[in-house]
Image (cartoon, rainbow, N blue to C red; front, side, top):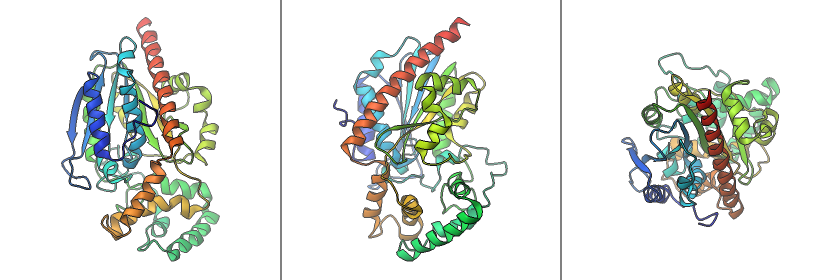
Length: 378
């Protein structure tokens, strides 16, 4: 398989290729159909899993893609390439891989970031019976991000009033308020929901069942988005000094996990977060397994010259959902613009994705084998 051949043009094609390759490679395949949504042509939407390696493996790599829908194209290609290039036949003894394809199949199929309910899955995994995390500054920003029309007037208002908010609160505070997650505006940015989404509940159930006897769990959640051309950013959410962070640094390099280095690649200080999959999975396994890993970003988007350009893709998605509709005359061009940010068809991007994914899989699986061996020796 050439380095770009693993990329698919649609969710349906990506799904079919993943399932076919997994079954041909001897994977134990399971299907989880979303009962609440369909694809653009009425197709079934499903979160699918494939287990490779011994069922009693004490160390397992949990590898997800498509948490943010349209970002799934690169992660799906990375998974397919690993399978087709013989990854299942080269697993270290006592190590297995559980691949989860399309955590958010609705977003993947429609080329949107959020779920069928406009929920950001990396803000959703928390106790919704408790008071939700507050984000008071978002209230002031929300009207600027949600215009009735995507026209020049809306852009001028965003830039002018946004500049006043930045002068008052500081740039990072505004970036953080937009990105950290909010639980008050279902039609807004990074909405965390009011209950567990189907995707979150399904992933939680399968992780608790499939990894019930695992002792060490490595985690790679493939994403895209930051400016670049397939280079990697490792976003590890383990606290300083923790065994999980120590393992991640050992696998991928101290510099790759260095906070200043990550902030430089990200383009600013990383925002705060609530309800991410990383913490949810870690908590679900805490009684019996140690956990290490990262959200791993393939840098994908083109440079942006101002805040309006940086926010445009998210504003387009929100406009399509709540103003114009996914059948609006502008929908095709807007969806293509969204896809270009998250899943560009540049050959250089696709080549770099596969090369970097191969290296990351190799490093992580070798690290898991070493971690398992050290644990067995204790």
